[in-house]
Image (cartoon, rainbow, N blue to C red; front, side, top):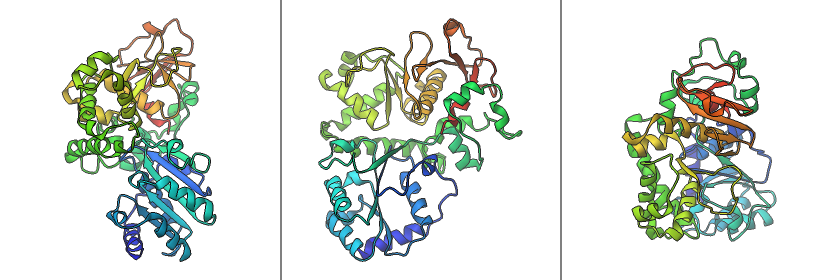
Amino acid sequence: MEELITQYQALLRQKFPKFKRYLYDEIHWESRLIGVKGARGTGKTTLLLQWLKEQNLPANKGIYISLDDIYFSQNDLKSVLVDFHEKGGEIVILDEVHKYPSWSTVIKNMYDFYPDLKIIFTGSSIIDISTQEADLSRRAVIYELPGLSYREFLALQYDLDLPKFTLKELIEKKDSIYTSFPADFKPLEHFEAYLQLGYYPFLFKEPATSQYRMNQLIRTVVESDMAQLKDFDIRNARKMLQLLYVIAQQVPFSPNISKLAEQTGIHRNTLNNYLHFLERAKLISLVYTAGNSTAILRKPDKIYLNNTALVFALAKDKSNRGNIRETFFYSQVSQMSDIELPKSGDFIVDNQYTFEVGGKNKTSKQIKELENAFLVKDDVAFGSGNTIPLWLFGFLY
C-alpha cells in the first residue's frame, strides 16, 4: 500500500496543464460512484488527476491507483481498498479498471459496504457496464470522454479561450455568431494541424513520432483492450487489424460484407460483430440510413474512421479531402447529436437538419428542395445564409 501512495504522490507533483477538458465541468463530482469511459489516449487520466489535485487532500485521504500496474499481479484490489479506507481514505481513483479481471465486483462491494468511500474509475470505451458480473449501471454515474474538439485543441495548444455552441445556436445564429470570437481570430490558421494531430492530446507534443505512436495506440487497443470483449477471440487480433486497414483504404464506403470477409479471412457470419467491436473501440464509425431497421448489429450503410487523426495515420496517401471533411463533421457532431444518412445530402442530424459537406465551391443543388438544409463548406472562414463553415462544427464541445 505504501508503494502505491508513494507512486501517487510523485504523480501528483507533476505540472498539469491549466486547460481542462469540457467534461470536467459536466461531471457531478459529488456522486459517490463515477465512471469515465473513453478511447485510449483521450485524456481521462489527466482529467481525474487534475480534479484530485485540486481537492488538496492529505496523503491518507485520497489516492490514484492504476490497475495496469504490475503491483496487482501479486496483490488483491479489494484488500488494498479496505486497507486504504481503514487508514482514513475517503477518495480513490481507479484507472484502467478493465485491466483487473473482477473489477466490477470489487467496486460494487466497496460501494455497498463502505458508504463513506468515494470511488471514481476510468475504463476503455469497449466496456459495457451493464454486462459486467456486477452490474454497476444503477449505482454509477457514467460519462464518456471523446477526443479533443477543435475548440479544445486551440485552448490546449495555443491558450485560446473560445466559446462553445449548441448545434441549434450554430444554425440560428449562423450570420451573427462570428461576433462571439475575438476580432483577430483566424479560424483556419490551425485547422490543418488539428485535422492531422489534434484529436488525441498526446500527439502534438511530439509530432515527429506521431505516426509511430498512432500505430502503437491502434495495436494496443486491438491486441490488449479488445481482450475484454466477451465474444472476441484474441487469436483473431491480427485479422482485426487487417480489417481496420482494409477499411482505411476505402473510407467512406458502403461495406460489402462478403467482399470484406474474403479480403480479411474473417467469416462473414462474425464480420458484422467485428465491425461493431471496432466501433466500440472508437476506431471506426458505423452510419445508417435514416428510417431503416433498427435491428441490433445490422449491417452499416457507410463506414468512416472515427476521427481525422486516424485517417492520416491509416489511409495516408489514400486519404482524400472529401473523406477528411466528412470524417471531421461526423466525429464532432456525433458527440452531441444523432446522425444518419438522408436520401439527399450527406447527413441528417437529430432527424431535423440536413447537411451537405464540401469544398468552398460546393453548391446547394442536392439539397435545394429541402427544408432545414445547410451547406457545410471547407476552406472558408465565414459563412452566410444557409452556408456554415466546416471548422465551426469543432465548437460543439
